[in-house]
Image 1 (cartoon, helix red, strand yellow):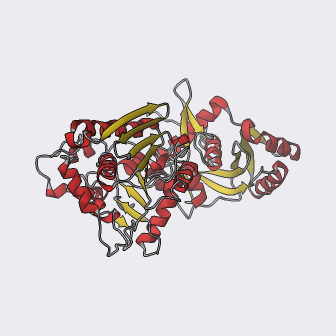
Image 2: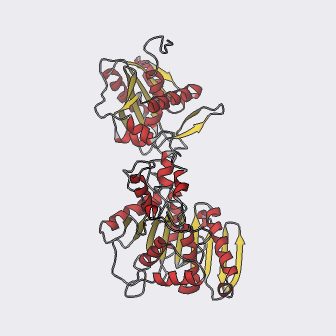
Image 3: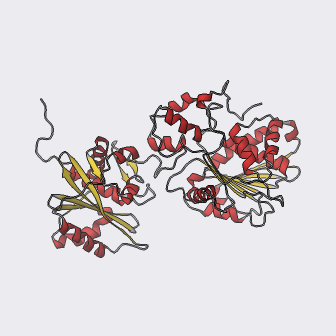
Length: 487
């Protein structure tokens, strides 16, 4: 027996053995399953499924009295390198050679991802005489690959931008790397091609995503509801670690890792996971712990940001204040941040946010901002000429000081903000919207080695984060001319 290009360990280590059953799953149903048929088929062609894969094969293939699948939509969530692609490939082969499924469609956010599975499936067929005897043709065109058997069964790989084009009534849809889909178009178009299918099944494969993973997040909401006992027939099988676990080489961490790495001790050695514990936190949480984060590889470390939180922090209406306003590139969102020095630290507070489905009225925004400026002794209001120039133009005639922060100065401000967070000198009030925007921000490099918060590349509203950086430029200035002492 082999495990599809994965090397099994000599003997499973009970101390670090992955969990067979998912931590979060749909409510179990008392129905017969065809899953054992898949397990037997895999063994017949020389592939032994891992314990968690056998569990999944049994549970996702429960059938109703009429012979149709109980779960016609299925979500499989698991950390990287656990055998998800192995299972996907073997499920396709079983459907083609044993179940009589006439059309299976496979797509991912990148064609190269699904193409890799295509070539592995083709290799298995060609290397197995019984399967090769059923092989008819292999087709390859731009954006599409296909294997056809002599009985007419087809396995079709499509690029995601044309996945549903010319397809009618597929028996099974395999959607891989679902966390990368940031709009529902591909999923919706594929799902509707199954309206005339006799016994359809759609399987979504992924590890954890972030706030931009639109398709995955919507499916997970249904999955969590099903796990809580709703009547939704979705099959949800999530191998993930509890959110409260801290990253580190501790017994508590390894217990959590078991839930997100079901192949741990079988094909994944603990030492391989130890090697990545010092990687960026959001990456470890998504790739190893299969946990949701606001943004994968964000500009600001979530743990460091959380450590700077203080719900009791308040602005002083008698103390010198700096403010900053920023608008989103589409002018549909804006945020105002205020900052004050507190000894050798400084506090940042989200004062107000604005949203408009079309475009924010700069006059109304300027009037709102003026009210805040009158409430605190504001030295200046920082802004970017690229996004808030029109607002600043309305403030200046009213006698409100404004300061543009762009280019190299903006890069410096981002660095000053980051320094304040990493050193713990920055304090924030744990405001939910503020935190959401801060942890959604993505950094972009300057050519000279510097960096800045990128508005467009963040794919989310980060006005509060940008405004915080601009405020930090003033709030980090020393209160005296001598800031560093040598003695």
